[in-house]
Structures are given as structure tokens and as C-alpha cells.
Length: 130
Image (cartoon, rainbow, N blue to C red; front, side, top):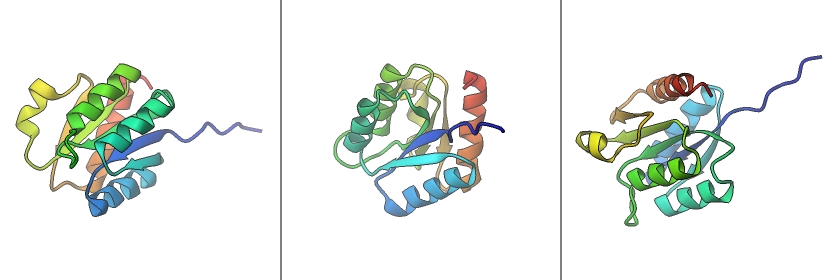
């Protein structure tokens, strides 16, 4: 009898419901469990609740409503889990990635094919040996 390993869980963050649904569906199709957040504050609360230990990745929009950005979400996630793979999604902020992004991250620009998110996350996870 084989023991099934738990499904890797990813936190997806976007304040646009339709974009969040697309990202969630792509990740689920890619074999991930998904927790979602519609704001940076909600995402940080989720990260802090379990100290990001059980997460296998973070996919976050860069520009989030409410005063905090995806850069801040990723920074907090890394404080809690230094090896967490992070995929940033943006329509206009890719030029800031070099100065505001965290190591072991990639940026995917909008518009994107949903599969790009899964491939980016899997590639980062392989680099981190997760």
C-alpha cells in the first residue's frame, strides 16, 4: 500500500477576482492546493497564521489595493519561510523587480498564459529542492 504525499499548497494573491480565479484554476490543474487572498493584509495574515511553513509557493500580484504591495507580501513571506518560491504577477511593475523582488523569484507579466504560472512555480521549486 502506498502512502499519498500531501498536495503542495500555494498562496495566490490578487485583488482582481477574475485574475485570482484564473491563477487558482491553473495551479489546481497543475496539482497544487490553493489558498487565496484578495489583499496584501489578508495574505500576510494567512502567512503569519501558519508562519508560511506549510506553503510550497506564493503567487502574488505586485499592485494590490489597500496600501500594501505584493513586494511587501513576498518580503514578509520570506521572513517566515526563507526558501519559499515566489512568483510575481504584474502588468506594469516588472522594471522594479531587480530592486524590490526577493531572491528565488520570477516575474510573469500580464497578459499571461495560465500555464506560465505553474511552470514558473515548478521551476523555482526545483531550484529550491522543495
